[in-house]
Length: 118
Image 1 (cartoon, helix red, strand yellow):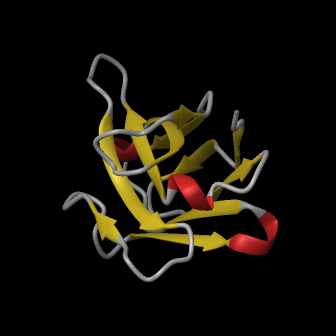
Image 2 (cartoon, rainbow, N blue to C red):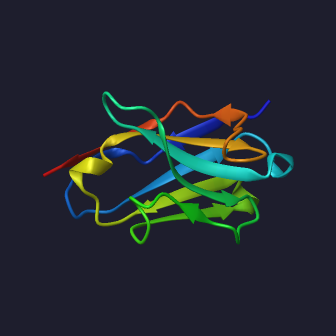
Image 3 (cartoon, rainbow, N blue to C red):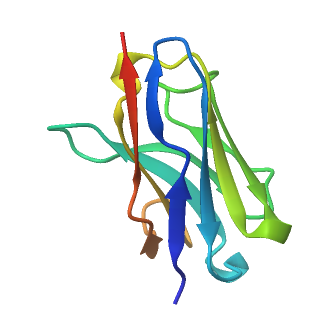
């Protein structure tokens, strides 16, 4: 069983940056892919970014490409999401997840709220 704990959310202004962290309770190499998703109020959860735990295979939603960066620290069992140039449209609960592929994530964190004011 893998437990994931997100942190780093908060209230920021448009144009600011935030870095989210997701700590895994155990090594998840066998689960291979780590990803960030988000769910805005009244909307369905959507994909944000993904990478292999060992890195080197990033993918991003078009809406965040060029502004967000996913990275992993294998030694710390932690994945990060660096978010720059935030806009109010980025307001959402952000979740990390791990699994064999993005479409089939096995474990999810409880989420961390990011609120961007205009």
